Length: 125
Image 1: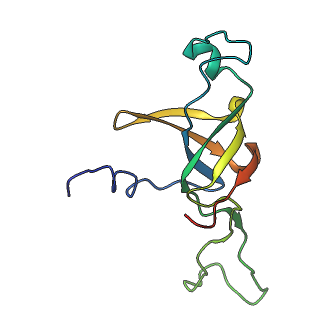
Image 2 (image 1 turned 180 degrees about the vertical axis):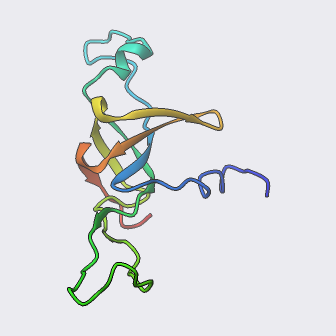
């Protein structure tokens, strides 16, 4: 399978309560007209970007009854409490909790949902 713009993120699996965010282009100029270098822009405490992939959520323990034995093979799969974030949402998140990665020449951040402060969801998208 050839990697294209459309399918390059399909093979990424985000683990647990994390989201993959593509940073939105930041402001290069302050309100007073000063131009900021990229290093200064990236050190802002709060950043924004679009959610590209979402993990399954918070794992919860399976309900075990006292009648089940440890050797029993019919155990339930792991269940999750889903995240509020959805693909396509604009996320406002704390930069200090973000892990930067480069994937196929593009910069992304992996952020735990607890570091996401606000989501903006466009229902039309």
